[in-house]
Structures are given as structure tokens and as C-alpha cells.
Length: 326
Image (tube, rainbow, N blue to C red; front, side):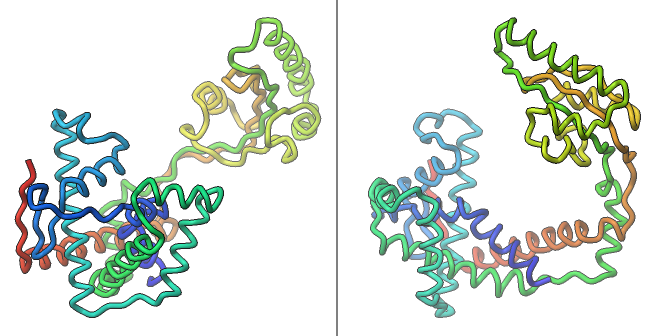
């Protein structure tokens, strides 16, 4: 269970390494009394910081969309998250939390290798008004918050077998195996915007292969000999897939076939396909045993979110928070 909670901890605290990059590379703004969006105890959160975070989330400057009610709502949510992060950091400092330099260096290198060259990484820091040392300080603060979340949220969450079964029984409709088929295909590649002549040549080639497939020649061997697709070396094997996993024309044709049946030519943006269905799994409700891992993940996430909100609410009640957002 601890390993699952650790994954959730990273998800909640940083989202992904991309999110860690965003938070760590956010340049610390210089607080200004006339530019304060919120006050959290002794800490000022400036509009500069808020709008930087807004842009990082939405990829557009707030100034361009400030008249949009949805943008205003998102901005308020961003401010609330910044406040929560500040409260977590203050609690970490109150508990005299520390982070080993080796852990900071490890995270620093993880961010650095996301760039194609050291020069690109340095330029990104410069663009954001950061030095390498400031970046490491941001990483340190993030890891300190994570320590608090681990202690106060994740370590306090557990799920029992009885709770899991009750959760499953309450949410049975969520645990369904969708209809799936196992299919092979042969692709004769042709661009969607190919000339009529190129399209005709590809179609003629595909029809020649189709004749052989319809006559019962080994489909896997035909795929190895004629397919232009990446599954060629697997004899065209696509494995099991659901309707939504393939482009619409392909899915519609494949799911209309019976087991063992070969399709006519199917045109998609990739070219001409010939499809053979090997097996079919009908939609069915999953048993508790079949769904147990997903049930555990879902219930753990629900309890973690509830515990996180409870803990943050407690921190907010003890803090002096003044919001000046306009």
C-alpha cells in the first residue's frame, strides 16, 4: 500500500515531472505592497506570481482573457492552490523539516536532462530570471511540502479488505470490461492527400493482397510480406482493443466482423487496411477479484483526497489569510 500511496503523493504534490518543472522553474517574485493578491500570515502572494502560475496552467496570459468568467474562476483556483502550498511550506518549516542535498541534486538533474543540451537548460533558467541556486531552493521547498503530505496525509490513509468490498459493491457499474476484439491487419500505406494516381496504385496493390486473404492464404504471412504498418513483423497482430482505441473507419469495420472473417478494403488516413478478427470478448461486469487492483486505487485516491482537504482546511483555520484578488 505504501508504494501506491507514494505514487499518489507525487501525483498530488507535483502531478508529473512536467509539473515539477513548472513549479521549480517559477521565479520567486519580489513582493510589492501595491501588487498583493493575497496575504498568508507574513507571506505576500503577488499578482506577478499568480499570473505566472495562471499562464503556466492555461498557456495564455491572463491579460488576454481576463474578461472571460471561466478564466477568472481558474485564476481564483490557482490562487487557492498557491495559498495551500504556502501553508504546507510553513508547516514544514515549523516542524524544522530538512532535505538532504543529495535529494535536491537528484531532482535538479532530473529536470536538467529534460533539455537537449546544458545550454538550453541554462537559457531556460535565464528566461525565467532564475539562477541554478534559486532553482535548487524551489526544489527544496517542493520536497519539504512532500514530506508534510507524506506524514499528514498519505501515512494516515489505509484501506481494509472489508472497505474495498463495500466500495466495489457500491460502485459496481464503474467496473465493466468493455467489448474488445483481437485482430490482425495489413496496411497498404497511402497519404490522405495522395494524388488520384498514387491512390489508385495503392488500392490496386491492396486489392491483390485482399484476393489472397479472401481465398484463405495465411493472414499472418501475408502481413509479413505485404504490410507497410509497424505490426508487420508481428504478422499484423494488433492484440485486443476496444472501439475507441482505433480511428473510426477502422473500428467500425473491425467490430462488424465475425471471428475468422476478413474485411473488404478499409480506407483511413493511413491508407488501405485489410482486417481479420481472431477473437472477441463481449462486454461484461467485472468480478471483485478481477477489479480488485483498480478498486484499491480508486478507494485510496478518494480517501487521500478527503484526508488532504481535511488537513488543508485545518491549516487554513489556524492561518491569517487575506485575499485582495480583483
